[in-house]
Length: 633
View 1 (cartoon, helix red, strand yellow):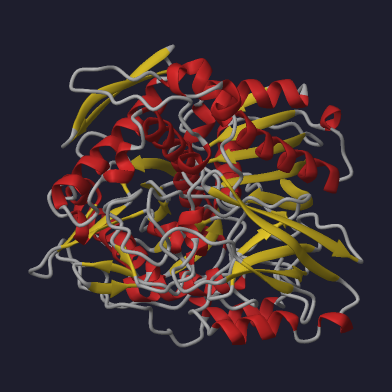
View 2: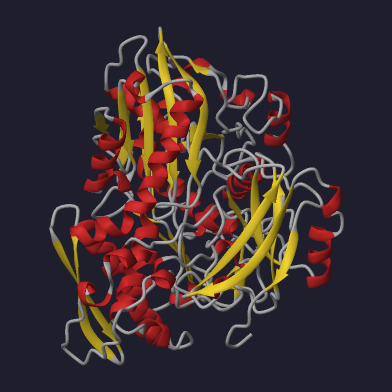
């Protein structure tokens, strides 16, 4: 029997696993590690590099390199690589194709089925884009599976779970957070309540927060870099990588030193584990609150949860497990392969599917009458077989081993729904849920060339683009208490330049919606305000002021109290469409989700509109207000 390939294209790393003869194993994608960086580099001669090769070359060709493109899925603003625009879907397809080609070359045959994972928060829009990417990759038979679901399947394969036991899944990865509650019933796992998650929160946000602290500690030296200078961009990328390595080192060390090697400044910044934990604690509380909502939606309390499964690379940060145990009072179980559990679970799922179902039928994964998006199963099947739609930007053929020649459109719907998952091939297939949250880029604005940002090698965003997908958090909120001018060899410490309250002020970054291309100011304003008086629910901005490096937006709501995942509000600049642009928000006034750098140059107003739980906006429920003056605009 042929093998099944599970692929987890993550925000920061990509992992794969193969299942054959009833056994699933991690596939070694890298030369030194099983997983490889989720990086794509397009060379001038047309060659495509991915993974480790792309990561190495990125230092010398940052303008041709894309990182964290998964978080840009659904953003209509293409990424410029070598001056050519590419949609995130096209880059995802290249990464996926290279993985399948590598596995095919090593095993000497194509996989019988490829199972591709995705954040549980993906709705119909992003799932359809993901299907398009899979079609472009031309990898043969494929199905989609949610990431927390895959993680739970792997856990059920490794550990004995007694009938009636309730397990909560806490999946914290590089770019997303997912949560779900499941109960074992006989040989099945049932999803209890609703899936919860955060679409833009993960380890990359903590990397960016540390980078922001370094920027503050060095008198904002990064702000002074010439973004058009390849040497400066390479230095910024190296510094960003140093921040990531320091974050990882603090899981075992009590202190880390971040070398800062810029053209005009050579110094170092020290960061203790205590300072790092204080800095990220507010964001971690968001994950706890999300998990709490998930448990409440199941009609349970934490006392009724037997254990909490910690999955994902970011779950290995010591303070994460400590906070989860402290807040829930429940024991935690850490997956033996936190970075590979999702790929392993996907392979296990596919193996059971292959043994129990004819793959050629290409039926959707969902067995319930309707998935979470509200589509009927038959509609989901029709979507999976719909003709491919062009992805923004060209897809250049991968130059490695040849992938399978023909792609069969057997892509199942991967949304989670309240359903049971049967034991497939003797494996208890569990269901988990979640959501994901964000990559921050050190940049000067969503509508600017962002080649020297987070990633300085992410390529450039097209001009006049909605800034929804480009966030700045720590960089904007952590300000130095002094203005040291560190000379060569001088050490600027975090303790000397940031107060504890500033360390904790890592601003929340609400989930941006898929942004549409920019519309005219008058059109966007009119769309939000034309029929405001007719809406039973309405939202209005009362004031916008600049607080540090962020906008502080005061607002009021009539007829509802904004709260996710229920009725909430969307904030957006007037260069974006009210129906698809901006950031969702479900908290109290004021809203501080936008940094000054997020404002497109053409934007003159900040807007608000009420939105339903499914993120559809309520026509005529919003308004726009002029933005305060800002240097350069």
